[in-house]
Length: 287
Image (cartoon, rainbow, N blue to C red; front, side, top):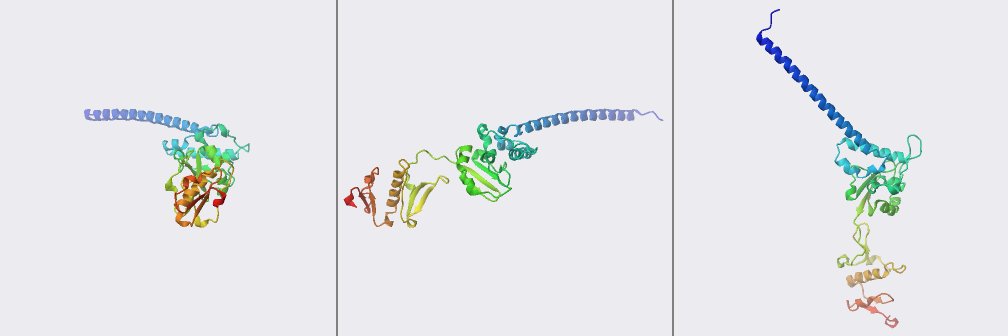
């Protein structure tokens, strides 16, 4: 065997050094991978702790907002944990009693997620669940999925007072179909509504403000044969009579004559002289 030449020796030395460098790089990469894996595992454990809803339903609060700022895999994990909670509240997998939640102490921002259990709204043996991808609680839109049976819209509408009390504010049923329903939060009405002449419409009686649409509500005069305003004191009969007067005067061309009988508590005198067709009767002989 011939001895290595200086050139071959240098090549071998360079190869050894390169191999050692590669080995060091591999060890560094392995260390980085291990650190990253540990970090990912720690984050995953933290995520799993945050979405252990069965142990702490309050963790549902702001769940949708947290999903938007988390990695995509978090959505699937959160959905699975949320669905598991609803199932446990309906029927335990271990044949034990259903999981009980103290609804009265539940965090307000967690309440939309457990609306169906609170109402005991069961469709097809399951609680409808809040859709985590189409709902936007911060903007007052809650979309519920009820894929296991037919939804009774009338029953849901009857529960609106309970829904308002549970979620806070005023809500309406924006839409329903075979497998879902959507709730929308309405802007609060002021304690006092000041009359706006722009609300009047030709040929129609202004009934007031629709609490669902926040728009004026009307009844065409052509569809009316008579009108009875009944109720106990303090229910707003006088206010409605003033709406009637404004509506009639706004559509005076539709009437041959408008006769207002001024009774106890009703001050029709302020309307006297506003229109030639209007006659204010305050004494029996005037009738």
